[in-house]
Length: 156
Image (cartoon, rainbow, N blue to C red; front, side):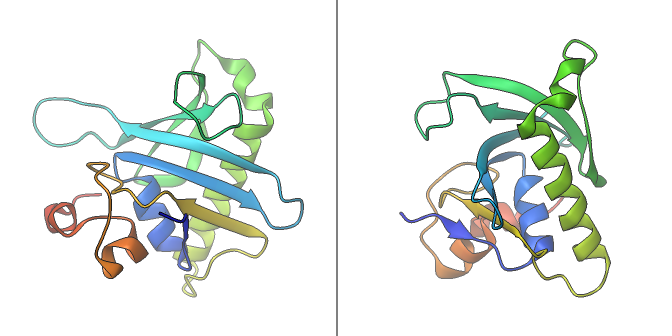
């Protein structure tokens, strides 16, 4: 399935915060891109709002065998990305800076009222649900990045 690009900042944020999202951000100015995986903390009871983010280290869309922990964010504050105390050097990585910028721009656009994708930024998903990672087949699900069963559960 072709990669799907988001047209709404809020839809991109919802997908990224979905709990099991694989997404690519691309600078429209430079063409540089990074692919990330954002997973939720698994705990008994309700889903925890913290998302741990890894970047595909080898830069190719292959298996996630070469991935580096970039940082984490809270779904209630999606424009805020923090490094781990074990890896403070990640704040200097181009992937961290790019994701931090993208989350900040997405959050500002979504909260600013127009909800358009920020100029110069593209966000893509691979056609898999951001929660359960099953392939998306329904056109509405493909657009939003979440399957109908997972969407009914709510609670991003």
